[in-house]
Length: 111
Image (tube, rainbow, N blue to C red):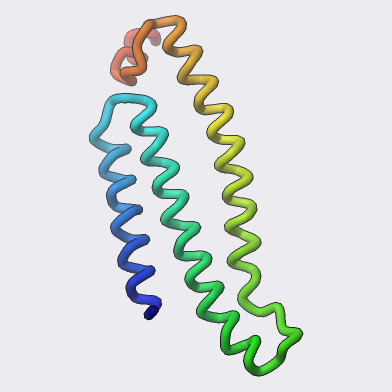
């Protein structure tokens, strides 16, 4: 499968995530859109890693070229897992205090 398909899919997913973050007011939906953007980035990293690993492996079977993208994906997934735990804890505490997950309601907490 050509790399252009992966790039197009990742760009579409990333744009959907950006639109969701900019237009939605529900904290959980915004959180999910941020995760969608991280997954689009992961898709690109794995696609480019696969693209560069094939020719390098054909030239030298012991080559580790192209593995770096997969390592970055692993670290992004670890950071995303930490983000999920912290983000959901913040959303739960927000819901306990104000009984809403609408981020417009948070502006009233400044005063």
